[in-house]
Length: 130
Image 1 (cartoon, rainbow, N blue to C red):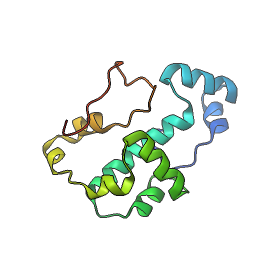
Image 2: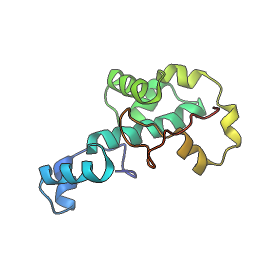
Image 3: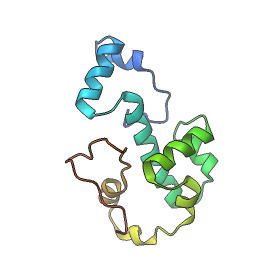
């Protein structure tokens, strides 16, 4: 799912690959990652969308489709829920401060965290520039 985030999510296919039933796969996934397979996939998509929006050479609509979302409205709603601002606002603001941060650290610092979901070590991750 991390590598193929732009492809449609198919829980039955993922479950078959894991040699589990769909229900068992979903429950096991949630127990291991703290969220459903769909929520996990959307977090990865939003994470990638943030990187594309920071570049500034694509429109919000182009980013939406590039990360595998099929609805601009759903993408914008989920982005706003996870990031705290709309994709347009995120794209419009300056990201120069984070340009000197190595990509591997930027990914950790900018990873979207769903409200109520664990943030890895149980601590909230700081926003870039905080």
